[in-house]
Image (cartoon, rainbow, N blue to C red; front, top):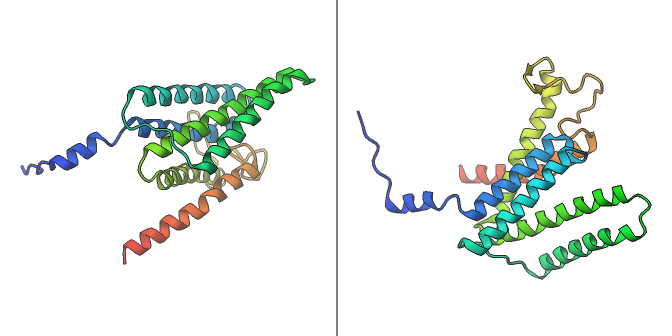
Length: 211
């Protein structure tokens, strides 16, 4: 029997630091995006409410990590802070619109949605400032999710007869256009199209590294 050589101390320390609080929150954001994509876009109850609760929990986790864990720091340039401030003002305006709204229930739903957007943006700012190579990691994470979404959509045409418990690929039986899992073909197309530049960049980088 051949024993594997022990890893150097530097590799052990790197492995111990691999799942930092910022990385855990980033994984949570990725999981929230994946859930929204595979829950018909999470644009209606109860999926939307579940996603909003998860986003609020992630925000609390990020706040706790900022207060009690090392390595978490909120930082952004002027453009980022301007965008975050504009989103906050839009959220406040949405809340104030209760004063003249003719459909308070719809306004409440829009306020919750705007608050979720604001929390996601704020958490992303903190995570992006606390991780190494945040843009690359975020892009590759989105590429993984978009690939899974595209494969699920194509499965409706390739293997519609496959059924495995709650997993049912026969989602084109009533409408021929590809739209699952986002339930709307334009949303599916946009979701996948956003991943195309990332995929091209990743493929070019791999090709350049193999030469």
